[in-house]
Length: 580
View: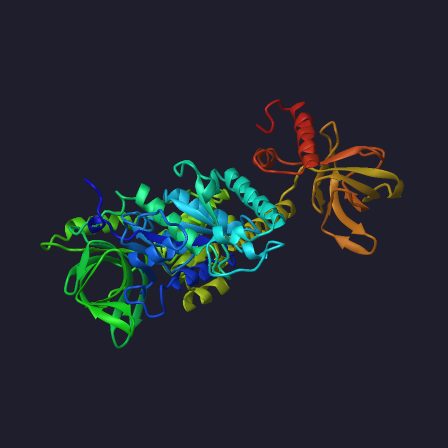
């Protein structure tokens, strides 16, 4: 069937990128793409979205690009920037956005959130373009504003053009290492093989016509089947929930399929499972503020007032119920509410405010090789703290909470339970904090382990420091590997008992242990010098076979590992299966 504007809806566009790279400023530029200040039917900022109609697109694009024919009815930009918001706005289990803009600071290149954004876009198979922002900060820039990139380029010096190309090629190369083939949009002959880079300055409003042109061209060429308007199934995605005393529960929603009417029965997901309610009112932002509508067609940003006080989940779909058939809708909502996350028997606990962000943070955890034992939606509660505190492995006693609150009784429970809680709203910094804690905890446990059990260690008696020959032997020792401790039993290279360490002393300080490289005074009881033990003789800490078995699977210092292998050879002279 030939596509006409009657059966195409507006493509939904989402903006992603690293913090401070210009996502919000770029959206402000797009909102400001007016034909005239009070143009009727120009741009209407709706709830959670900015709607640019066909007439506005034509005016802004055709001022600079004469040959493009516009078939789509406009573009709907999601106003909530960020890859986590993108992941939370879902359409039938996939991404809500039909196409996305990835904003990259041309001078800084790829940053942690840029990489997270690319990962999320690839996960949902969402096509995107790259806005290479802040081109005005490149040296030799000749100042201009409110124009296209192509017109800006015409007035620039060659030095600037060379530096611009250099920075674009750097981005092209960095994106290639992430599995993304790209080029400057005007140099691409086949848009199925390369992602388009559009150089812009959000600050000076340069390159917005180019972005609108590329988005429109891609949507019309590659997204026609995706953006067919269908009225039979009404679908939307809740992006924000507001509880207002005077109104009740309102849902800021992106309607992406069909026409929703006042009075329609809708199914949605709540904290206690799927539920049904009615649309009490539909509100959109008009010229004089919120305006009530009897019906709205996709794609649109709307605020829905519902009749019931339900604890609706952010990121949930709304499905209009036809002929009272809730079963299919409930089944769809239940399937949608199951996060696509790989869980392990051991690992950390993750909580987030919505399914999409739970999946987004779990994906990054997987990239960082961090196992997840449990992943749930909702705030961190006392029950979470108690459950995690009972886990056997101390490395698992950590909860990462993304965009969630910690309840007051959970905070109280944290004081009496050894559970680490890490919360925040920037994934890469939270993972950084988590990795630091895991590293610290591993070191702490290693220290505890070394102090509570003998570890493969070797020492030598220094011949110049003999203070007493017996009861006990007091000598100067050098620790060659591992950690020797008060109470450690020693053996020699023939597997004969070589005394027990009674005390360790560094100058006037008594020590409980001494690490590799340390020289200090040592009292050894149960032996006599030059009978059972001798100066310059290697002595070993006598490590039980069961501990050696455990240590074989652990990372350890190379010198300690070598000592363990020596110890095994010594022991197997008497017992060939020792340590197996």
